[in-house]
Each structure stands twice: as structure tokens, then as C-alpha cells.
Image 1: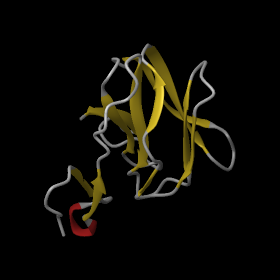
Image 2 (image 1 turned 90 degrees about the vertical axis):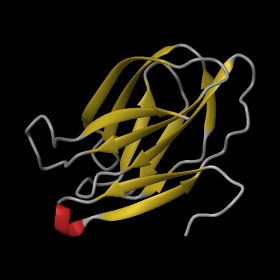
Image 3 (image 1 turned 30 degrees about the horizontal axis):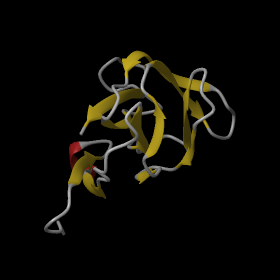
Amino acid sequence: NLKGGIYQTLYIVGSSATTLDYLVLEDDVSAPASTKAKIRFINLSPDAPALSLELVGDTTAFADRAFKTNTPFKQVNAVKSNFVLKNKETSAVVAKLDTVTLEAGKIYSIWAKGLAASTTEPTKLSLKVTRH
């Protein structure tokens, strides 16, 4: 059920056409500080374990997200960033996203997509960025 008067994002999720589901998230579109960007992390990989997203060289944590769960938006430095996605239990790096430019005053969702069990490029576990 979509709500009036607020910003929301709809994600279609699942491992096949017969298992499709959805996730609706409310977007916090309040502006970050003038030198900051705002990001949240969402785990949209249906077969992945709990995942944690880290900004390389930054202590901001986006930790322990199970499938279809997200972190709140957090303010981070507006710089070029590299991200690593880790298996929460083993700390093994399962995906990377290099050289993402986070612009001051902008709001982003970084989300895990694909299947942890896949090794083929279109469906393997990876990270994507959406700017709101």
C-alpha cells in the first residue's frame, strides 16, 4: 500500500519469475549537511546471508542486513568512495563497487542484488547505486 504525501521506492525482488515479491521503502528526502551525502544500504539478494556494507577508509557501518531489510539513511563524507559487501558471518568480501562519487547534498540507496549462488555475470551478487 503506497502512502500519499511521502516519497517511497518500490523494489521488485525474487530469484525467478515465479517467486517475485516486492519491498516498499519510505525515503528520507531531508537534505544532509552541506558537505555530506546521505546513504542507506538494502539487501535485495534472496539467497544471500546477512550482509554488511562498508565504505573503504570510513568507519560508517551499514551492518547485518538480512534479505529485504535496510539500514536507516546515514550521513557520510561527499567524496569518491569504494564499497565492499561482506558476508556478515564470515566477513568474506562477496562483492565490490569501486569509485562511486557521492555528491554533497545528494541522497543514495546502495543495494545488493543478484544471487549469492550464481557465478554468471548478469545474476551474480553485486552492488548497485540509486540516487534519489
